[in-house]
Image 1: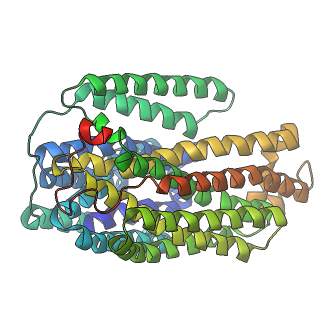
Image 2: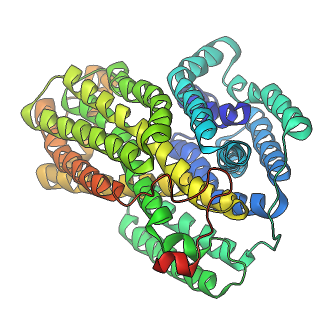
Image 3: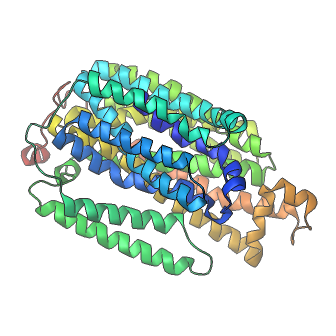
Length: 485
């Protein structure tokens, strides 16, 4: 749980310090890279860490990941320029990729399903607590001790975690140790990185060319990765995991869930501030109910899984997500107030808890221990990839809508997000209320698509395994015979 706290807090405390960091180091045009590079390196390494944990044991890999993470934190604290900070964040991401997936795998090794559900409810509580207080802690540290303290605070916590993992953790090893699939690892990393580059970074003047190029490289690399996995005797990602609904459904649901989480977090604050004229504080506060109720419902969802099984718990969570997103779309369509939008986000959060915890528990329940590391790591992997690619696609829809309504003046919509410029700068080329209406109408199809994906998620819940499809500790071996059955 301490290792999980390290990764969770790191993703939330940095955002509030970034304006101060920019003021000290400069590099405003590189602002997004501080987040993007961390996201990319942590995402592409998740399955690799999971496979390494299966091959060489959980303790060794968890110690390695924590050490890499702390190394990145130290370099971040001493960065003297924005490129140095970005490089250090890349190192941090390389370490963070192994923290939560391997920690979740350890909990699956140690506990039965009933015990594991309660333990992973605590893991979700740690994440929820970090999401709620992380921005406040980051702001306090930045004001009191300077922005470098938000990175150095991880060092003593990480050292304690290393001591505990190294001396107290019960080890579990793969039954049949093999070798890491290096060609598969390289093609997967290249493919996912190219796709993430394609949706995260488009320099002005060459966006379309870069988009096509990155997406083409990503698609070709992932196609090659699939071919390598089918032919490998010891694949990085066993293809059998995707030949049965028992594991395929949780992974697909993770993609949809990631799109929902990232989508609401990205576009609802924009709607509140840009279309409703709210303050930056109101834009951030509107999704607080989602985070709070997600943390609460994860604990409740753990009990639901034990009592009613994976399928019923996921279905309940998916229905709540659908109700929340439908309320969000209806509220935006009808011009509802900000409290309505915030309440809809809270309902979404109530559904995220059962959905997210059932996905991980279902996968861990039906796979054998020797594959549990990579199988567990794929759950957050697909959630992050789905969220990143989904938000990129939805962002394209938003941009197309703004361009259609405002033409070459679409760039001026950003003035709504800068109270200083609207107060002291020259008047915008079109009235602000017109820009607000353009943002509102351009976001309607985004919210409609999120609601439609929620319908698909409800249907997917019926494909989740039941509790009797596996054993509490060892799981069941997924074989061709089992797939055909």
